[in-house]
Length: 208
Image (tube, rainbow, N blue to C red; front, side, top):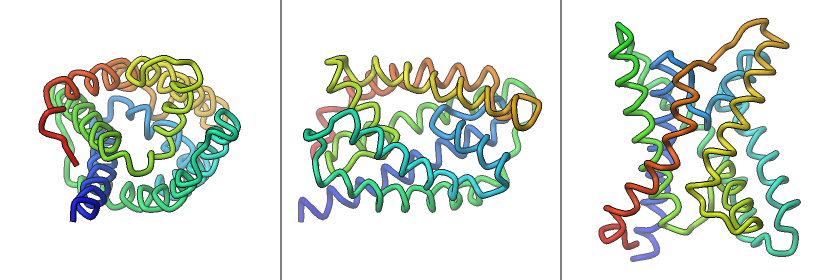
């Protein structure tokens, strides 16, 4: 029963992360780092964000295998399944929040900050269940293991790197900055620390 509960919480965490990412898109101040690169790529390729996310799932798994080599756990190949589910959650979440259209900069910023907290909470649940890492977070965990640097400290670096790549691709293929604004930078900087803060206060209650 405990194992079933863990898997249920894990699936919930994936949905929460996808919901937070979708809220960042609706804030229209620049998408969160998690969704920034897939979002820009979807604009370039005309595929849905979820479909592009699946492609990145494959890329992220490959990066982990290269970094960890023999230390890459075989169960982490399940990230392929999880990545598929998460990709579907992304498109579903975008449908759910389609009615949200904040008016005014303050409301947009408020929605962006809410999206950061939502993503951070989802990431915390995902890590605490210790089932299978979401591919993007698996890359961060892999870098953390190889470099011996804590996850919350590695995440801003990886997030910022994905934002820079998204900005470059956007300028090259679209001719303008799509999905990359001040909100993207804010998300890249604060999501990691928020995970750390939530972990500090919620750890005693998150036993799965």
